[in-house]
Image (cartoon, rainbow, N blue to C red; front, side):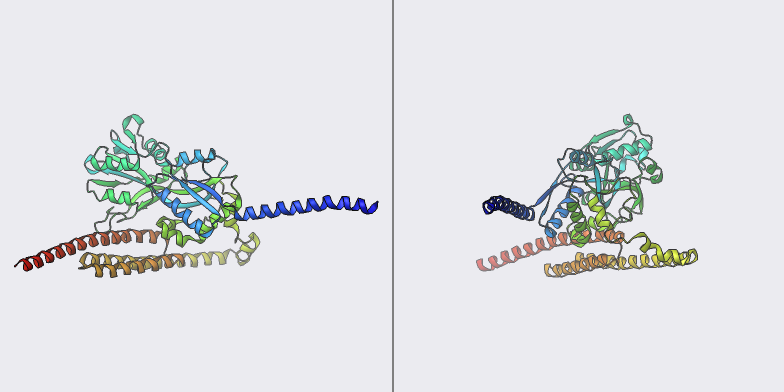
Length: 446
């Protein structure tokens, strides 16, 4: 009887154990084959947010095939936040001044975006206050640009009844300004944007400074004083002619607090550790830098991102034991020495970047003088060799992100010059072939 009872007990236990093992094995296999898909809300398909989102999606997929980021176009920051709340998206790119709910947290600060006020020259608009009575092309009402224009108009004392705001798509706004249907256009966008570059080649359109940045920070603390550097949109005939004061914000990658920490950690890791690849896909990635402190801005970082930022951070005692023991007098001396070293390093970085810019200017001159397509191809190879050197120097911190940004403008000019010269030389070559063929036929007829 005892032996029979033992068998009766053992069989159910064995079945349970086998069932648990099967469930565990199936679950393990499914988890290791699972691909997590996250939807990233960006902006207009022709805008910088969408382009960066596509670049990020490609690089993340390359480094972790189990994370798939689908890029979704939108009308801008306000709509992106709304989509996060409604769970239509799990990630979003917004301007740093955007009001976030407690459930939305930051993954990373991205690239700076600068206020651009473009005007028709004949309208006599020399400052923001001169927009009174003017027609102004603005972006979608759900965009961050539209909201920031309202902040500016309030600060400069312009009442809604004193100007005519026209909400348009980016393409519509560009056409309206080019054709004179509007007097001005306002957009918050990264420096060097090709649409702005094209607009400013029209001599009837110019940039206007937006000053009083410190005062504007009282209204929107996320705003930053910045400049549009001389020659940003044309180096040969500088546009602007001098450094132009303006205001800026930062594009920011955000997510919902409920998104799994391991996913956000992995995306953050790839964002920083594969930055060189990201720069090749989208040049604005060069402006991304690790935050100095995860509590410096007015909203919280997602735990997954914070874990990445803190993973190499030493404890307080280890980090500060030596400076404390040295005493205040040594700290002062060290600070003075480091300050001088910093000035020297910054100067060296700038000089290195200037060398590359000079090389680009020399190559642009060669492009314009190239007599045949073979010569043009050789110059193109030299251009890409310079670009590779700059990327390596950027990775090893031998040039600064700001210097790299200034490098991209003559670089884009050089690429466009090659395209134009190639078109011209091809046309000349085709014409010569046609002429030679005609002469040959005439000889045959004779």
